[in-house]
Length: 172
Length: 167
Image (cartoon, helix red, strand yellow):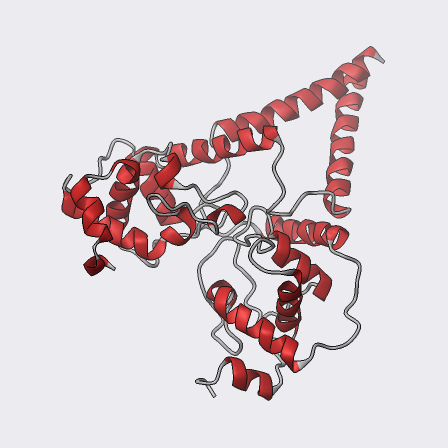
């Protein structure tokens, strides 16, 4: 038993020293333009989604309170084209800027989103720590965030009337 | 000895499984509008700086930047950087970004010029700092690094050119 505890303590000490060395000597990769290792690229987005799912759980069952109408999508699209498009890209136009972040900004029009409406709303409102996604709650009301959410959820599959309304010069 | 090895390996396996478990169960804080504890902020700033120091080119600018360099850098800065990092003489707070970007007019850069060049070129992982190496040439990046280093102490002739309306 004594030896078991000694072994355990040695493992803890070794890990503490290894971590301090790794961080202190600057061995941690910090370049945003370097490719992440496969395990990291697999594990970290899943961990972020798991945390968002857990934190947005209380509102998971809550549907988007806004009417399912073209007007909602057009209103959300206008907000999106104004403020989100720079990093997240427009339908047919992925953002060259968004991919220079680490983690890269998801290109919704091309890749869609794995997140539910409630999770998208939650992310837009609170932002994601240690990413370029900053909280939007100081800038937008909850209803505006729901409009944005509705738009992003449909961005790859917009009703033609909505796509047309967003492309007309009047909307710009 | 058998017991020692068992304790050693058991602890390692337990820790790795614990970390992966915490990640998969969503126990990690991801909210960008909740401040991180101070120890975490300090530790990460220290580790990031250590890494940048190791990777940045080991050169020192031979002479202080000319007004021309500062104007070139200033124009780029006011085009792409001031949204998060603030204008010369601007207000202290910009966006509530996690982690808060340094507002250089109020908190002078702690990095050397070569480190700033490297950071602008490659960006910083897990921060809002994107990599600008595909947007700007090395020469432009150096002018930006020089400008940020002098942003609190710009010659009036430079300010007149880059911010004519405010003066």
